[in-house]
Image 1 (tube, rainbow, N blue to C red):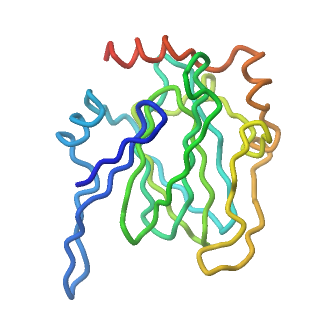
Image 2 (cartoon, rainbow, N blue to C red):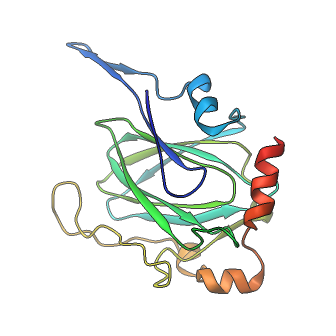
Length: 203
């Protein structure tokens, strides 16, 4: 299992070793000992989600109030996504920055983002299936979003699908109506960097 830390503090990508033969393949996509060594703490699984998306679907940028927040371990079981991690923690050295990683059904990589970061992705083909392992259950009252098309964040979304065909962005009404990053900051709904670090360290 290979673990690559990203420039955004706390986030990393896990690429498992694939064991394949004529029957198919097997991979350890999550292992608590390797995860804990990379993150510095255990991952307490409280909820697992599965989404199926048409090509061009953009979901996010989603985040939850901290505490308790919601850390996510994201895998693409079928198809492919461009997975985007956004630093929305006010006071962070990388506030407003984002990183994109390819998650697909070829290398079976997973992305981990700790509490306090924003998450979004774009599906690169129809019926793309994404599995999320979550550290806390979904709680509507403390869930928020930032518009994934916010020009100040400047995420460069893919223009073509996995086969090279043009992609048409598909967003939910909720994500379309989400505030910009600066509006969310003005409303006081973004997590604070130092408070997030203190909370994660206390777990």
